Image (cartoon, rainbow, N blue to C red; front, side, top):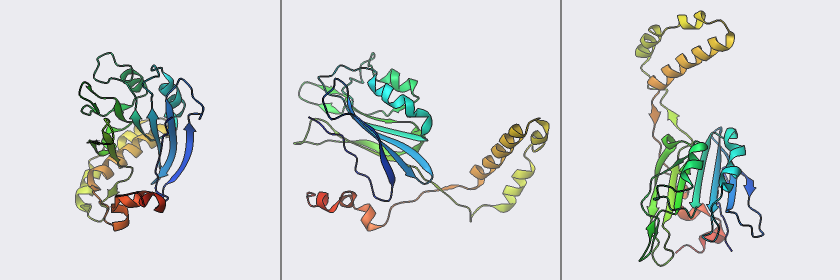
Length: 230
């Protein structure tokens, strides 16, 4: 028997989107969570594909109906696929869904086997702040995987160089807005011109978690879970 778990901070709006049935089936176990944070929506999923289950397109079938509904996707778990094989059966379905398998070293190591069975899959590699793997000696032959995925960024509005911004705005081809026929085209061009200015002059500010209760990983769970931390 196996379980798929999510531990989620109570400040994040989340709901169960889909999960595999409790009774045994010849399909991977999964749990998909709908998360809302900073006006963005994220589909977060965990997967366990038993070594006794032959891989099918079941995971792709589960994800396909939701692809158009979310800004971002994060999928992690034990897929039981030999990723190092050139003919592996997980890469092609992920490409069809426009998802990216992040490169890792071998995540399953024994005296005789060294391969990548545990995967981290995302929709937008640019949002990945950090990720990797940690050995778990005495606990499992599988490495522990971790991922830091950014859903927020702050812009430095106060330090925009106003004169340079105005000069750059004067040089933009605003006449393109008048040159197109439909209102939709005009709005689209205007939107792109303004956003390009915003991205160029309002730089992204890097923020770090400094509050002690958030920085301490022991506070990620409930009080009952915290009692079991060593």
